[in-house]
Amino acid sequence: MTFHRIWIIMRAELLHITRDPISLIIALFMPFFMLFLFGYSLCFELKELPVAVFDMDQSHESRLYIDRINNTSYFDVRFFLTDYGQAIDYLDYGRTRLVIIIPSGFSRKVSE
Image (cartoon, rainbow, N blue to C red; front, side, top):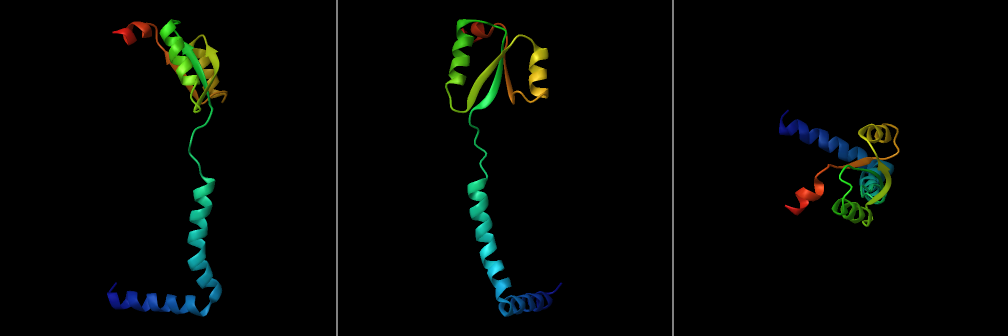
């Protein structure tokens, strides 16, 4: 498409918009309204996400680690699990969105 044809289409659209005041208002106002609306309504910040913990180490260091996670405003440790099957069930049934698995030997690896 040549520049001349593009210019003709642009001119026709501009004439249509200027002849119809409602189209002009929609063309100018709607993008700003949508930016304002989506800017205040969409929030992807995590707050108090329910968390389940499967602590296989059961050491002092792993408990400190869990306490540090729980003391943030982002996570809320609600469940303490005893096996992998529970972790899968909690995720599948929507009881939690995150499972933290602390492997055995965690305290040894932290102290190294």
